[in-house]
Length: 281
Image (cartoon, rainbow, N blue to C red; front, side):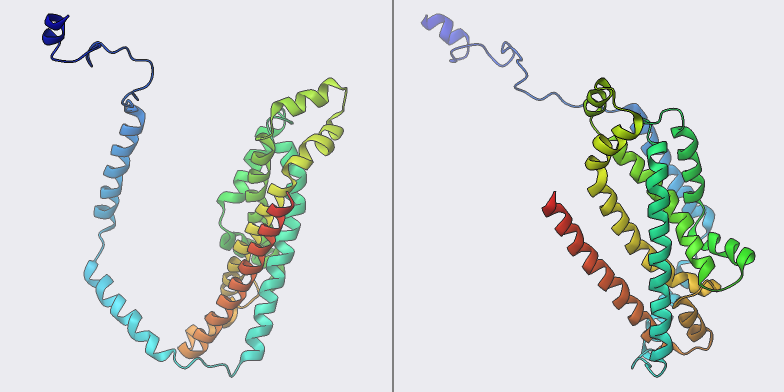
């Protein structure tokens, strides 16, 4: 006994080399070659972009100084045209709300046809259609609709509706696709039709997700509606564009403060709404 104990190095029991592996010791994760290749190619392309774009860092430095100096012309903010600014801000808010509301209704219907687990035959078509609406920027849609219907709030509403619908169809359909297949199979086993499955099985499971995504999209559309006025699609963006063209930096700063207050207020109340929705779930 003592001889065996001495030969084993003074330890009782199997050594580390002899210990069986029962999954207690985590194995070193293997590197995925695909991820390594993607990472290397991405880094090389990033460096290529920096070289190809030929950044002039001296201009970046001088431009930063000029940007900081321009703040001296913004104080104090000029609120002499506050009536027109607030009216334009209200118009931007109206454009965002109407455009988003129309997009929510439109996307609500199409999302059920774009979900692969409930509409496998039509999902590819409606997902492709939503991708087309989504990849074109809102500002480009606004320019297209300005040519079609003229300047004013209408092209802004149509632009926000189009781009928001492309996004909401995607996220709504993904929420539907995350539903447990067992729930759908149980309803199908009872002989329920497609509409009954949507109303009794799918809709109760995704309604809170739909509401959260709709509120999130409204927050984004408030900011986008403020920019659309720059191209003549109505809203407060027209006011800030005119102030910048006239080098009235103090007026432009006041308009920026109004935009900040509007976006912050909407985000504040929407966050409270999300918290209320989560508590009700």
